[in-house]
Image 1: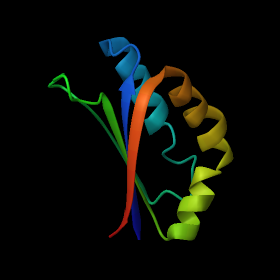
Image 2 (image 1 turned 180 degrees about the vertical axis):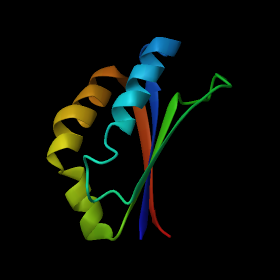
Image 3 (image 1 turned 60 degrees about the vertical axis):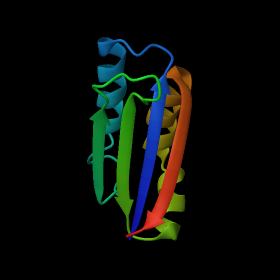
Length: 96
């Protein structure tokens, strides 16, 4: 299994915008079948080095991760929104 983690720093990290982004990330639940689990968390510390939101997705294999990256809902709704609102993002993918 593979864990895919992405941290997002938003251009506007107001509570309303962070919640909206988190809701959109969470909307993948039940709509992106390759994702075995999806977890979204919002930062509360707001330190200078903090990112605003974390997304953790578990998939079965590297091939499933590739398919997840190209999933229609993930691309057209989630990635489109996050690319629009994110100032920066970082990711890590590892075998669990």
